[in-house]
Length: 547
Image (tube, rainbow, N blue to C red; front, top):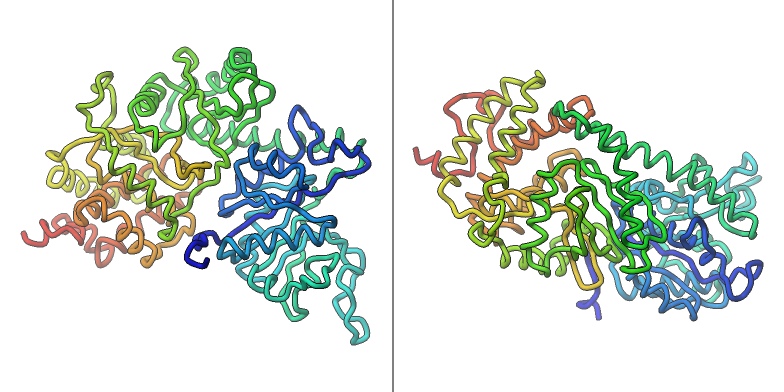
């Protein structure tokens, strides 16, 4: 029924995994061949999960692998047909019946070199085009020769992934006479984008391809991404003048080796969606799929460990173990682990934040290390000090910092304090098989309003422009958990905090810091001159207006 459909799911990746691969033997379909201790399809699912824009992943599998895929990946699985066109048709029918899909990417379970960046690029291209094809040019020809229409595949070698505006594809899909190439269902007048600049389209076809793909994956995807991640971690942790970061990064590999022995690890890989820690995803004999997270200091480990210890199990991923010497946390891997974007229609997200609100932890409940836990204003002042050596909009920042301190004293100094996750944004709220769960608590003591401020920054940052409509929508969404005026006050303090954060921790020529500054003026003041007046205080806070 329409009312039961997941209307918030707009972007879907369809993973084609129905082939049997006769060259590999009937008992060993090629997508389930082992490549460096993992199935080939595992690499494809990893890339799909890492997409920042995908709302859902659907697998099309052969009948005898449907339950296997569903159990292994925690994803919807559709039974394929006896041909690829029929399998695609089954997948398209399932998506139409279950989601309000607007954008669809079709990829192949034997194409492990496709990346999350490529999937995100295709989702973005569908804003301007009706479909996107990964292709090599075979001849310098257009769709018409001497005024006659020709089949497009005669002039382009079409490969996967490909992407479509789903309503157009579904409306024109010929379910009665299935076509070899999916894009042949698209009307001729549709606007197409041919992607010629992605050379790593190789898929597993023959047994001898397996070793080559393994080498290419390491050289093209894994090693460059890990190197870039470690450089990001180094830059992030060193940005405030911290010493010893490089030696800590070098030691983590040794730490991981010891943890691998302790937990009987079969294989592991770095999770490259991190800035301030080093994270590995692992498959183990003893505990299934695990996450190993290494933090750079005893202080950060301590405050995160305390949050995991006291937080409601309804909210957080499961903590399996820890190691104080290595500053390591061991977590049950969240499946499927898709990032949860802010979407008001997503009832699972609403239930999650309802649970967060109902299970806030008063600091009186915490029996250990309370004096060592930072407050939100401790973090604020830490970032003030770290950014002080930078001249970017210095006078403006000092003026905003002064206003933020005054707001804190008036609104929050005497308010009840809780131990907050303080980092509940889309990359730290993941879709699990039972709903939404959180990971990576920052851990800070503060009023409850500060639990709901980070999504504003992160969701708006994705666009890097101030969208007042989205801001108002988010304000309405989160104001059910706290007083509106207090939420506005907490948001002002947090905007100033993030502006300083972006000044010293982002190597982007102050692009994000300037965006924060402009957003502060747009949301809270009439113009820059008013913002800089010592006596003017931000709008939306009646206590200042009354004075």
